[in-house]
Image (cartoon, rainbow, N blue to C red; front, top):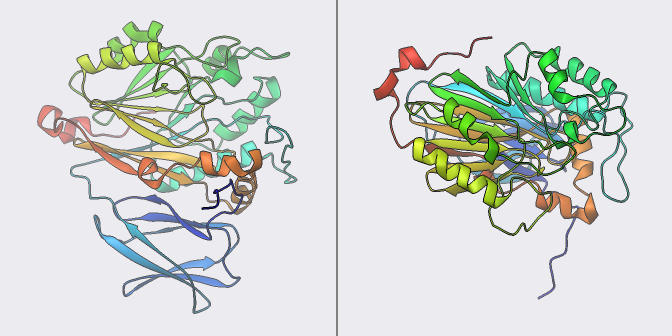
Length: 391
């Protein structure tokens, strides 16, 4: 059998995200013309088949396999299928995250860097598209999980201000290693975030609906890896044993004593004891990080641990979370702006095409539901706990 080598070829049509009643399709190679999706007897007008493109298809039945025919100007162009997630019980609220924005970056790739000729810098263009998509989806809080800038320079923080100017919902933010690495002319990210009212403490908790949202600064000055064990007491103090908790960090939790991929994150002997300690206090924990520029999910006992890739390189995503008294849903979507899609599709070819295979992760690790161990309606009551976050 011939070896399968890395390739820069993208699938013509891909189901990138799925929820209970909707899914996101993305495509790179479809004929020019008007695109229509047919599911059973229903037709969904998706507009021009711009290349590349992304579209949401709604109105589907939860927990059901759906065959989808895509036609361009009445001719069948592609066929795929989707199994929707089951419907979530009880009231819910939506929040969104972005990470690894890298404002100030002007090229992508390890050796031969890809350059963008668009008038708007691609980090800002992609971040704005992600925020617009998240708002259209219904997010009521945005969490920014670090690596806001490339070198923490004044002009990069000014670009961050341009990004924030268009966001009408509350924002929480933490720094990443790129913000704290200490380059020439770098500014202190703690001061910059606090000036904007986004980083009151290294461990910050906010009640969103019936869930505790906790952001944790895991950075070490001048280092690319992180540390979290020294924050244990503060995180335990932020936990509410009568509410589930979602904990956001920049660095990922390494899953074995000897690291097996780059970049280094939170070392196994540092992060795993913390997770164990937190689970003793509260079994309903969901962790999500950035840093690796890839999409992955794993479980540790009753906890779920995820990584979400960057907004500004392939596949170019943001993550949405649906919080309910019975569980949590994660859905990772590609940004939909055509010019941003065009850029992130180009970065698929980085590292001799390996990047495009490494970063996306499987659909089941991007879009999934996780049930809490308890029904929190019975504890706090939906009318009291499941409300929108305050500004």
